[in-house]
Amino acid sequence: MTRFPIRRRVLLGTGAASLGLLASGCDSILRAKQTRDVLKLGQAMSLGVQRAILSSQPLAREFLSSQLSPVFKVNGTRDPATEEYRALQANNFTTYRLQVDGLVHAPKSFSLADLQSILPRSQITRHDCVEGWSAIGKWTGAPLHEVLIQCAPDRSARFAVFQCYDSLRASRGGMTAYYESIDLFDAYHPQTLLAYALNDAPLSVGHGAPLRLRVERQLGYKQAKYIKRITLTSSLAGIYGGNGGYWEDNAGYEWYGGI
Ligand SMILES: Nc1nc2c(c(=O)[nH]1)N[C@H]1C(S)=C(S)[C@@H](COP(=O)(O)O)O[C@H]1N2
Ligand SMILES: [Mo]
Image (cartoon, rainbow, N blue to C red):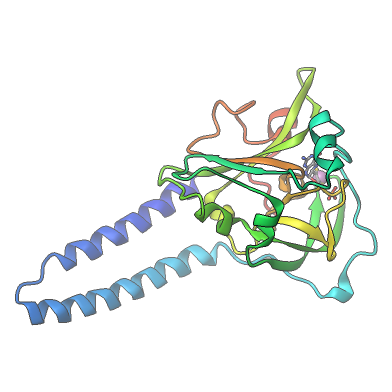
């Protein structure tokens, strides 16, 4: 969690330094040359900054189709079984809408067809559940960053919070919605998908139909199934138990479920 503000400061610092240099030119030819040099320097610097960031943001390992698990276990909720969910199922999710809101300038809702019209990404990765099992599967979906940029996130946004259709038992008794959250570094990671297919078939109800998260450098419980809504926020305080997820609130799991 402390990583985020530090990286942010580095980026802001670089921008400010380039602007300072740009403002210092005098005669126009000299200024043009300086501008070019500064732009080059800016490019070199941002490449350096990008490298610094990406070096701790590696891609999760990808596998070959020959390595796919013959069976991908279903875990946690197998069927949200609410009236709301049944209604979506009844028409094969054609009335499903993913709501994106919060700290965005253009809140939007997306049908499955909208999401499928975004250039998809497929990847074969290993899912690791804290309960001690793993499975290799091929996921296909819309890169989350492509969806978020359509909604013009505000600069103050730091987290993406995923609200799901299913509810589970709360540690204090009663039921509570499944939800999860990730920071915007993971949200913009190239392998982070809003997945609608597993092993080239539409997601089954067991695996989270119609839409589930794949955030490949984190553990199974972060892979929210049955996504209903994504809200960008600046803080996780005040959302359900305030710890950023169902398991974080109810069983003390780590918010950053790194593998
Ligand atoms: N909405 C929702 N998402 C969820 C869960 C859940 O119960 N509800 N379980 C989590 C856990 S602990 C795991 S291991 C994976 C299981 O995904 P799978 O059923 O596709 O194997 O989903 C995660 N996402
Ligand atoms: Mo899990």
